[in-house]
Length: 478
Ligand SMILES: Nc1nc2c(ncn2[C@@H]2O[C@H](COP(=O)(O)OP(=O)(O)OP(=O)(O)O)[C@@H](O)[C@H]2O)c(=O)[nH]1
Ligand SMILES: [Mg+2]
Image 1 (tube, protein in one colour):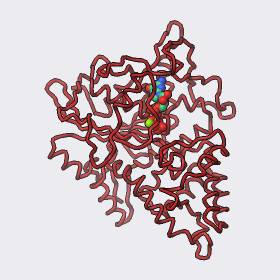
Image 2 (tube, protein in one colour):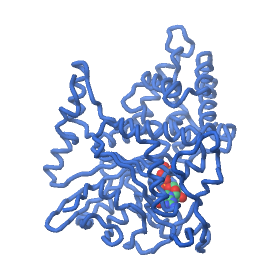
Image 3 (cartoon, protein in one colour):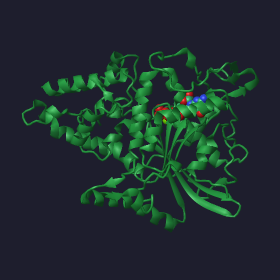
Image 4 (cartoon, protein in one colour):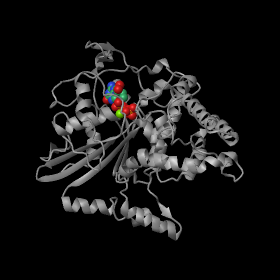
């Protein structure tokens, strides 16, 4: 039995180690993942703003100071054809008192930074991924052939995400389908029913977030179904694919006729949409999973369950293989260890912490995030010292009036007026699902709008951003 923890020589791939040795620059590659609306883009914008204009009084980093390196990657040259994170646009939105738009495509923030603390100096190239939350649903395609993906779908919707009646109905319809439109209609029906049941794992994600990057939503399954009626299930109308259930793999099954075609369309989709992100993720050394705990409390148990399954699935991608009990798997493991960087830290971040009053509430926020994802974190196979749960508001929008037990914030995007209001409290534990429903009045955490200095060199006020940065950049006190 080969044990990865015993044999691992480095978390970094050989390629990466050579690159760093030659360039003299340390590279820190960070994946920021989370479902849609969890706060990833706002975080990236605030993070870049703070690092490009570091003010130790606003963001103390254990005595370290950060300056952009002369090569100034902030202005940005895309490397490897990867889109660069549109920082300037997002920062402009914040300065105008609006939130950045929903992310449509994946991008990478690249910053060349010089870190100093007394005599110590480090040159770091920081790379942080931003992607639309919907794309995470396609991650199971990584490293899976079409057939393996079909098996995974059966496994996921027949157990991992809970046993799904819409999936069972889809499988029955697929097994007897005679024409492709019939099969595609059955799969769309399944997606719509899953959507209505709050599932976040709608794949291929281009059905939800079309190739035109317009997010398809709807108030009900029927609304959603109508909104995805013309969206191809795949790259385009000619290259559509759906998972075939096990019954279709039998030699006499009518649905088997589509196997080859779906294999081709699936491969094309994986190559164009999923693999570029997957390749980038292969070299990630820090993982941050964002969760909007307050939003979950507001939206009730179905969304909670969907988020929990979704997050566990996203985290699982980074699990370190811990053993290999055959020679072939042992060799695979060795290759993997040398070619692939393994995450050396994972952090769950409960976002939007400025929507609650007091440290006590923020600490409960962290506890809820820990209860939700603690097991998924431990399953990563990392030493517990490298796992953490934090709470953060990347952009602090509220003022606290502790003596009045109130918050002050802009509650209306169109007006600059600040309203003072009594903020809801975070519970000690996740509510009992029997008494917890959508829009529970106990969890009325009001959405707010940003308000802060428009000057670019004055980065947004925040709560707890420094704790994330200390981890991300490994900034120990000197
Ligand atoms: N009060 C407060 N609200 C926040 C903060 N961060 C995000 N929000 C709110 O959450 C919304 C979504 O934030 P985004 O950063 O766009 O979310 P995302 O994870 O990038 O979402 P996708 O692009 O859809 O995957 C924003 O429009 C704000 O309403 C924060 O620090 N404080
Ligand atoms: Mg985004």
